[in-house]
Each structure stands twice: as C-alpha cells, then as structure tokens.
Length: 318
Image (cartoon, rainbow, N blue to C red; front, top):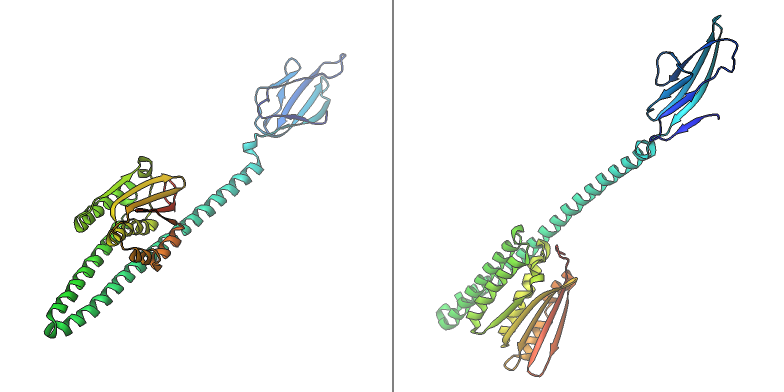
C-alpha cells in the first residue's frame, strides 16, 4: 500500500509493527508528522490513534537496536474532509452569497423603480384630473360671469356645473389619497369603501344596488399600483349604468384564480342605449383595461344586460 486514505468519519486506526528480526531486541518509535511534535515509544508493537482530523499526514517509524543503530521509514496517511469542509464547497457558498447579494440588490432597484413608476403614475392621474377639472371650471366661471347680467338663469346653471365638477374633483383626490395608503391593501377594506360609494349612489339616483362579495375574494391583496384603477372601474361601472337609466343593478365580486371577477348585471328597459354605447367606447376605459391587462365582456339580453370584468391578480396582489 503506497498510501492510506481514510474518510473523515472513520479515523479510529491501529498499526501493528514488526522489526522482522527475532535475534536482537529493537526499540521502536513513531511520530505522525502533522499531529505529533515528538517521537513516542511504541508499546506492545502497536500504534493507536482514536481520531484524526481531516488532513495529510506522514507516519514516521524509527527502530533502534541495543547498539544504537537506527532505521527510519515513513508511510503517508490522508484523512479526507467532509464535503462541507472542502474548497469547492466554500466556492459554491461564496458564489451563492454573491448571487444572493446581486439578487437582493436587483430586487431593491426593481422595487425602487416600481415605487417611482407608481408615484409617477399617481401624480400623472392626479395632475390630469385636477388640470381637466380646473380648466372646465375656469371656462364655466367665465361663461357664468358673462351671463350673470343678461341671462341670470343660465349663469346659475353654469355655477351649478362648477359646483358639481368641484365636488367630483374633491372626490377624485380623496380616492387617490385613500388608494396610496398601504393600510388599505386588503380587498375587505376596499369593499367597505366601495359599499360606501354605492350607498351614496342609491340616495342620489333613488335606486337599489345589491353588492355581493365572496369570502375567498376578500383575502386578495390589492397593491397600491393597481388599486386606484380597479376602484375606478368598479365605481364608474355602477355610476354610468345608473346615469344611463339602468335599474336593479346587481354587483358580484369573486376570485376565480388567477382573476378577480367583477360582474355587473342590470335591467335595460328604461336605459338610454345610445348613451350606454358611448360609455362603452370611452378612451379612458380602454386605457385602464390595457394597463391592468383586464378583459371586459358585455352580454345583452331581452330586458337585461351584464358586464363581466376579469382582472388578473394573485392572492397577494398583481
């Protein structure tokens, strides 16, 4: 045997020694280079090591007869380390650590970018809403001023429009501020606010709106980046149907993996069909659907119709 190789978990070892001479008495000494500093006298012609740490050693043997003549030989011994104590394992761990650091840094940058995009999106929506409303209010105010002396009734009409637009802008700003609050991520809180809005519509249009949400949908988390668009779709759907003269609106919200499904059913007997067609083809509606990757299906029956809105979401958000 040129070399003795042992596994890390099997290092109890015993060497039996012989001088191969029976005429003279020899003293035998040993030293395991890499572990022993001094020579040791072998007793009973044997060497025992109960444990050897991983590494490479050289067992040195020295025999000495009564006249002081010495003979030295050596034998290599290797104890292989466990896989978790090898250089390649350390390299793998180092690569994993570097990979994790790189991944965390990418995630941090991605989230930071997403937050910046979300803030930009919210700011754009708010700016668009405020700018449009203020422009309309400015025009209506100027017309009301011009009509104040010659046509006071028309002036009052324009002032009423100004009041309505101001209220709508206040509500829109309130919706945006509510949606950017991270405490409102759950659909449960989302639905409480939606029901509050529906209650105000019932009073305004003197009609009943039934809202039903399934329990599994309440566990869906709506992130800030999509909540405002979804709320706008839910809210404008009911509002526009009531504006067109629809009756007995029924809203059903459920989660059908991977979609949040919003179903709006209503009676069409007294509805303005032309107005409904115009509302269905609005540019703003198309933009919201494209941004959410959502699908809107319209089905019309003899005396009723239904909108089915499917928005792809996960249980913990989009």
